[in-house]
Length: 286
Ligand SMILES: *[C@@H]1O[C@H](CO)[C@@H](O)[C@H](O)[C@H]1NC(C)=O
Image 1 (spheres, helix red, strand yellow):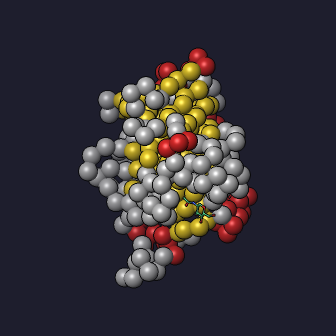
Image 2 (cartoon, helix red, strand yellow):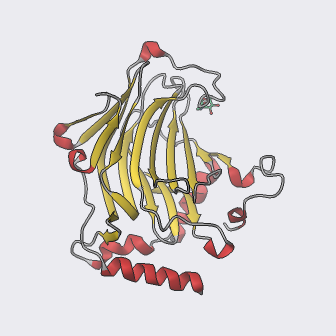
């Protein structure tokens, strides 16, 4: 149908224009620390990036490249101990008033209490698609891999290779899907004790500052957008571009269900109170 024809056309374009790989690692090459006045730092020859937050400021970085589709992995280790009030945001976003955005946000908590992993998807400047999860591990003791697969038909959020959320292209139902605006990767560590702790009940404990979040092993198979041209990774084998058409197989669907049944604590798609006029249309497809 129309959408699959369109999809084939996009894909042909992407493959035909392929070559440059977005490659792995090195924070010096791939990212720029954009704010925080020295609170964000790259070390270990470019293998480690650290953001920090204290009472006067947080910090943040962004990717040098813009991407139009990608399969992007990053390992994060989050603020340990009493991290209540801190938020570590890690997301893809385009620019302008009708921007697209794919969000991971990690809401800190009191020592021993669970982080919330908050996710959202904006299309054409409209979000309101929150899903929140607890994690099945302590995200502050080790690095864990947080991934965004974004191709013309699917957005899949994964944690350590386990899918936690899928957003399908439902343009056939009139729901915009991010596929025309290139996005950068952004991350920031900031203070959000006015809302992140159940509406601001708990305040950030500044005696614990500075707070740190760390990043390593950035790895992107992606289409880099430059001067209106998209170039997709394809090093040696055509299987390098398999992510462009990837979807969840049945094993992955089972894992997604496991997460949603056991760790999902909020889903906009079941929030009838919030949407008394009816749930958003995309909620009707699984
Ligand atoms: C913090 O821990 C409490 C108690 O377990 C929990 O209800 C809450 O969802 C956790 N997360 C945040 C961000 O408050």
